[in-house]
Amino acid sequence: MSPANVLDRYYLAITFLVTTGYQLLGFAIAWTFQFDKITDFTGGSNFFILALLTLCLGNTYNARNIVASVFVMVWATRLAGFLLFRVLKTGSDTRFDDIRSHFFKFLAFWVGQIIWVWTASLPLIILNSPSVSAHSQPAFGTSKDITGIVLWSLGWAIESIADFQKFAHKSTKPPKDIPIQYGLWKYSRHPPYFGEILLWWGLWILTISPSTNNVGDLPQSTKSAQFGSVVGPLLTMIILIFGSGLPTAEKPTAKKFYEMSKDPEYPNAWTNYQEYLARTSILVPLPPSLYSRLPQFVKWGLGDWNIWKYEPEKDGQDV
Image (cartoon, rainbow, N blue to C red; front, side):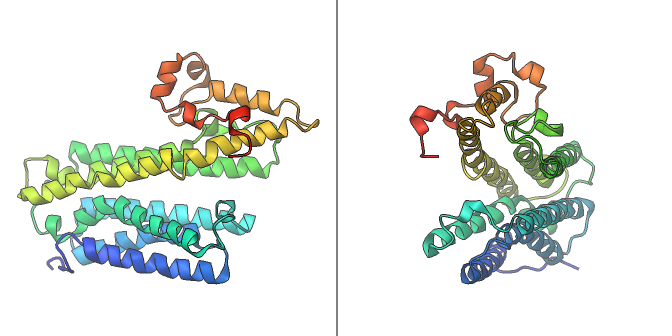
């Protein structure tokens, strides 16, 4: 059977409409009941819906389309399930404490989630669309396919293991004045972010494989669309580095340890945290013995910038 043409040959309109409708429904429920139980779950599950929808509409069940679609569905299922479990355990998400009761501020988060889900899904959306599936492609197993699979698998493993290790570590009730240095967290301050960035770049490489080979008859417009879908992994990387990732974790965590050090019970909290920063890479996992010896300009190249650093006298209560 041939692929179904729905609104446009790239499936851009139908996937945007589905994403918008699903997220606005989630917002309506979250706003009405003033809770956070479905916020992250709605984001993760939306990826699953788009992957399954475009695979079925595209009706092209070759190995590349199936593998790429399954990758997204596996990632979405694990992430949505984990985040739902976590928020059910904690009862609420502190990120929304200041905006949950403000209609437009809360809505802005959900609009941002619409943009992220749809944009990050673009590589897979275009791969499954008639613009690609209606044309012949190189056989699955090219060097680009293998590279994409390896990167995705490594990224997914890092993200999944790091989330589990942090949850397991917290369940042991460790000392409050010592930062987590268990498992992958010994080598990176934010291994889940690194893993997520890596897996989305791996998926993009896998999805553009048809456009990087001389085999097949893809038109230039389709090749341009596939290469243009690089905005997907780029946006995810930007969000994690400059948006809801590092900025919401670095300074607040540092402030917590600084404030804790004022408590007579935890006088070494700030010193422990400073030592932790000096030997632990901010994003890319590296052995502490190596990272601690790197010159500052190399650490800057790895993303450890001053904008993340908490300075008590300067930042005060603004974090």
